[in-house]
Amino acid sequence: MARTRENLNRFRKIYPQKRRSPRWFSAELRPFKLTFSNEEEKTVEIDNYTTPIIVVTPVENVNLWVYSVTPIAAGRWEVTIKASTRISTDVHVHVGEGTL
Image 1 (cartoon, helix red, strand yellow):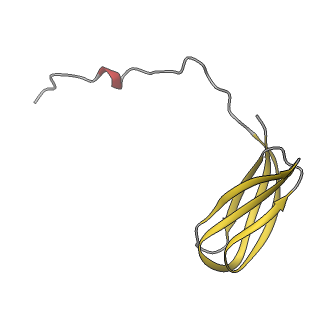
Image 2 (image 1 turned 135 degrees about the vertical axis):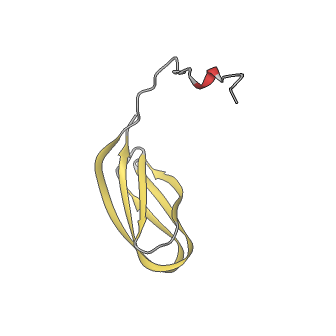
Image 3 (image 1 turned 90 degrees about the vertical axis):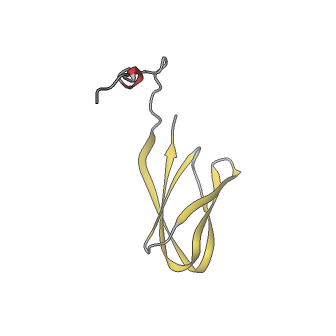
């Protein structure tokens, strides 16, 4: 059975009119090590960042996420990390400076 219609949009390449430059962050990451002891939430303060980028990595198989990043003062931030369940393990936190 032959095709009677072809989707020409499938072959058309659409490029944005204004190309955007990529957003980078500095390669210097500061590692922190947090110890959860039967907790679901942990708060840590970080210094000397204008716009922090935060990466959280657990040691065990559990979901972790950055719940909030709140500015305290100029260059100081309060970061809240939450877990999907109560855990007793170490968590690695890497913080980098975001640039535009």
